[in-house]
Image (cartoon, rainbow, N blue to C red; front, side, top):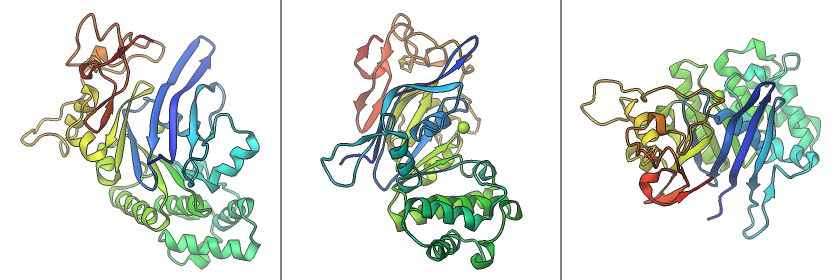
Length: 333
Ligand code: SF4
Ligand code: MG
């Protein structure tokens, strides 16, 4: 089946005075329809920049310098829309109506001087031809649906009047108010306590069932990915090194980086392992990308004269796409 969204060779670079930081440098991934893709990786690997690039929400000094982001229609065999090539006007239609986004800190994306209700009403009316009362009813319905108590009163609250958990619920209500086909959630629960975090993840899964939307969940937490994801894409230094079904990637990872990440989480790692093993070494500085395979300075399976020279391309191994020379084909880039 066609995916809902396909990112091909995305490159988003930060053009700074003294050099270029290639935050996203050849990301390819696909988001299946109506399902959850978790994008995982250590902080600074380019997850958030990838997410923001999809809606072209990157600002100077960041610039999208290459790639394609293809949004497929529901009807089969229609030409996808390339979001990177789309006119601004078309892209504004896609935002909210097709793809909506929630962030780690809702205060950053909610307006502080407008009520929650007015913000939802504005989003709905921008995209749909509905009257003010109908949009307000929709706002109350959505606030109710995301578990905000007394929504008829809360609709007139300002963001600062809500707790962190309630603000995140309000943000989700706003994001879903136009019934998007894809919700991109960037660390939506990271700022919340464990109980609220679990509630919000449950809520997202319920809403996915109800509305049939796809979710792209950005998280550094493999436990979160294991809890909600159908598919997992693993990022390292600005590229996706492995993507496949969550059960396969998290229980039998192919890429040595994913293997090290999984070992570092006691719940996911092998039984009998009581010591937390972090991924060996440190992430190289942003200006210096290692030659060949970007993971080679930290890899336990490093093959001298090969991994430091040859850039691995992605190959299919079992049900997993993996970019590592242990699994076959090579390419010079
Ligand atoms: Fe390790 Fe080589 Fe595979 Fe890179 S290509 S992950 S260095 S084995
Ligand atoms: Mg981030």
